[in-house]
Every structure is written in structure tokens, then in C-alpha cells.
Length: 362
Image (cartoon, rainbow, N blue to C red; front, side, top):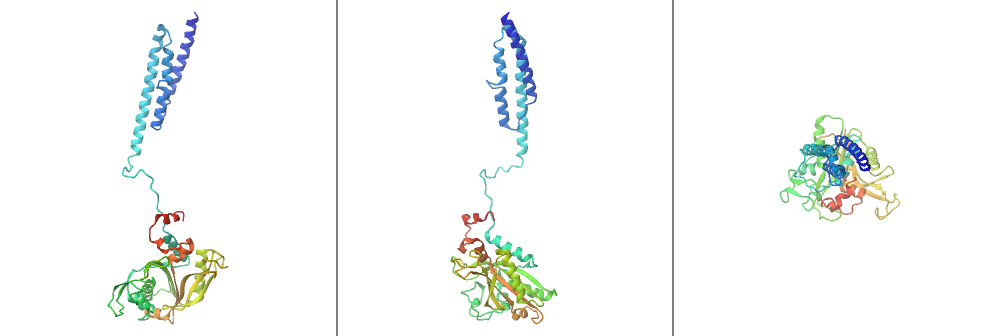
């Protein structure tokens, strides 16, 4: 009597467990292969919940086994069927999600490139001047003598026209001709083309920015290179004064180097401007007090400028008695040196990733 009562309790417990597991089987979900393996281990492995019921079933007397054999087999088949269905669904989902997968791509992570420091500085300069009406003008790097020197008031015997200073492509030895072909030594050649076109347009003013690469026959060192980058500006209209030039450059200096930046203009000489000046900014390292970077002066030179020489205007077909203008020019490498403290100009053109990766966050 005692064993019969015990098996009756075990039978009732087995029935409850079968019913519970049947409900769980209908609710099974899996998103990937790892989920499927976890379900198989939980229910169908040797120590799984369904297998444990079979272990309990084996302890029943022979007459009791006939009652529970079929329900247990049906439960096991239900779990096997359900897991197979989930496996097919996961496989189909993975197949659809890899249709656009490029199997030729490297499995290793590929680092993203960074902006070149000269590009960063160039675009910042352009952005600053574009806010006050300057537009970008472009021109050829391979130019003729007329646009590079002749129309810019360079004397025939000027040193810049010598072969030791300029890369000539076509030049008759010992003879200076306007048609000589050379690599431009400054982007002022873009200004002469723009001035000539503007003289015929009838527009009231010309306000342009000329960024680009220039070439000079110099020995390559930490402080000089045979090519570098410039940004030159030009504004021509009626009644343009030196005060307009100073205010424009003061605005640029404060936008580029900070609101506390001061400027000073020192008299200088350029063939295409009169009067001419070189502009310094207050050293931002020492606040103008003097340090090693500014050589104790408190000032750092950044560009040249001046009023457009009347001879330049006349050579471009513009009446210098009616119109006046100012021009300025700066080296992009020079501005980049001041912003990023790069001491060797060669780093800008050597494509050393260790150097360029420093600017990824700029």
C-alpha cells in the first residue's frame, strides 16, 4: 500500500511537469545559433529537463510505464521539432542579412584617414574671409611670364626672373620674353587674370581669395621647400584705403588666432604693391612679453600686404585714377606652423602616418 501511494504521487508530479514543459516548448524563441544551443542543452541534453523526466520514468513499476511512455516520447519530439523550426528561422535570417556583405573586405579593422593639417588651415582661412565677401578664384600652376611677373610690375632684371630662383618650363637662354613658360612662384598670377577679366565685366568691385600651390627653386630644408602653398587676397573698388586693409587683416588675425591677438604693420617692399608692409601678430605663447618662439620680440611675422601698385592696375586695363585696391598674401605652411607648432616644413609633404594621425581630432 505504501509503494502504491508513493507512485501515485510521483505520477501526479510527472503529469504536472509534462504539462509545464509542453507550454514552455510552444513559447521557445531564439535569435542566433548561440540561443539554439542553449535551448538544446537546457531541455534535450543528458542532464536536460526532458531527459530528467525519462530518468524519473525508469523508476516506475512496469505497469505504470505503459501509462507515461507515450506522453514522454511526444514531449521529446515536440522539443526536437520546435528547436529545428527555430534553427531554420535563424539560418534564413542570417542568409538574408548577408546578401549585401562584401566578402572581399579585410577582416581586420581599417582605421579611418584624417584631414591633412594644410587642408585644415587652408579651409579655415577661406572660411574666415568668405564671411566678409571674398570668393575663391583659381588659375593654372603652369603660367607664362606675363601673368607671373610682367603684369605685376617686376623689372626685367628682377632676381625672381632668374633660373636659380624659378622653375622654367620653356625659356630662351639670355632672353626675357612674356611668353616664357614657368611654374608659378606665387598665386598673384591668378589675381592678374581676375583683374583683366573684371576690367571688362563692368562690375563695381572685385574681392577674391586665391589659394594654391606655388614653386620656387630653393634647397629643401626644415625651413624651406621647393613647393609650398599660399593664400592671397585682393580687393579692388573705388576709394579703397590702407585703413580698409588694416581692418581686414585685424579681423582675420583675431578669427584665426584668438580675440586677444594684436597686429602691427612694418614698412616693406613688394614690386606689385605701394605702399607695402609685412604684418606681425602678437605671440600667443607669451602674450607679447617675449619668449624663445618669438625670439624675445613678442611678435611673429605671418604675411605681406599693401595697396595695389597703380602700374599693376593699368597693366590689367583698369584706370588707377578711378580705382584702388589692396592685396595680401600668406603661406599656409607658415600659418600651420603657428597653429600646430610644426618646426620642420618637410613633415607636411612626407606622408608620415605618425605625423598625420596627430590631426585626426582636428
